[in-house]
Amino acid sequence: MLSTGRTTCLVVGGGPAGLILGLLMARAGIETTVLEKHADFLRDFRGDTVHASTLTLLDELGLGERFAALPQRRVDRAQVQLDVGIAQIADLTRLPGAHQHIALVPQWDFLDLVADAAEEEPTFTLRRNAEAVGLLHDGGRVSGVRYRDRTDGSEHEIRASLTVACDGRGSAVRAAAGLTPRSFGVPIDVWWFRLPRRESDPAGGVGRVSAGEFAVMIDRGDYWQCAFLIAKGADAAMRAAGLGRFRERIAALLPWMADRLDALESLDDVKLLDVKLERLRTWHRDGLLLIGDAAHAMSPVGGVGINLAVADAVAAARLLAPALRSGGIVPRSVLRKVQRRRWWPTALIQGGQRLAHRAVLGERAATASTPVTGTGPVGLADGTVPLAPASALPPLLGLLRRFPVLQGVPARLIAIGPLPEHAPEWARRVPEPAPQPGSAGSAAGGRHGHGQRQ
Image (cartoon, rainbow, N blue to C red):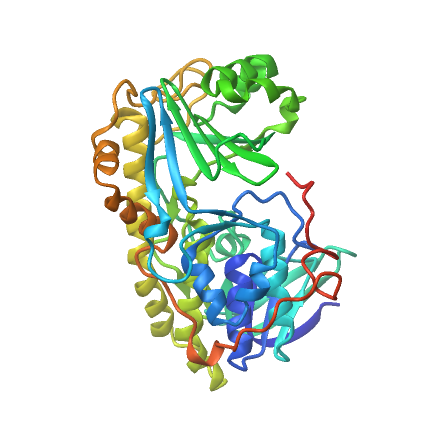
């Protein structure tokens, strides 16, 4: 027999959007339950960037000092290495405010921090190992979720005044609601891998563009998190070509890293990111709202997905909390307000990402909409992406080099975004001192500092 529970705000998905929303709703005094299908947050994340606008939000929530105590790297510049030289494209030291950088923090540490803060609120509950498997309905209205306890396979129901889906680009809630996102053509996938970093290496984020090849290296302190662009659908063909061929390509693209490629022991060390660029036309049903990647999957260009999802959560909390505080049903008109506020910055950023595809890959590749394997309209036989020519410095990069003050524009677009959201007054707290090393909850022990995760 199914067990049944009840909450006011039910959040499906314990990622950045889900936990930030849960924290804010709980601070509004609203009974809030977050369902997270995993037992913990120690998973293979690569979206580990916390941008300046999110750092400001953490300050407003009184969590800035706790966050600062986490192990992290700070990036205040971004540059791209072309065949004709190095061009700096963004200077974050030109940003306004206290945070003139992007923090690179293991996402499990960030999620633990937010979950710990939320669990200090008496109206917050985090249920782990709880996988949503279906929606509950009251007439035509979504009234909650059916979920499976992954520890014993038992199924349960939890009813809610409002259900919010924050369960990512493969959202089970979105599928159960019969919502299908509009998909924009993406010509690339990404191979992720890590290589050792040495003190003599460049610091921060480094992009490398050459004929047919593009890689991004993210400085993680003792290693580089590397992203290598491949043609959409070319994963199988490239794996068939073997590890040796891939090492040759990386050595040719990044000669200064050639002496450490034996760290790639097999292609099992290389993970595929199936890149998607999608957006729902409607982010809501009666009793249901979708935000973050569940509403709009982003390209990895700019690394802005987490920033955008967190902003969605803040806007949703500010607009939804008054209706939920009253204990009533949230009108569909309020759900529309959330989508209206967050739709245009989402569409603007996705439009910018599509332009970036075109600028880097060239017109023909960037507008292709069908996956390929082997040869085809986007990929070459070995998975090479036909990049735009790199024999000369592109005009835009030349302009940024000539007038460095302009580097503040891409810095602001990436690190702050077109519509930053701020914590509502009722969610703000006076900053608390960071835990001391060795104390309970310290970033130096317990769940934190798991540097061996890929």
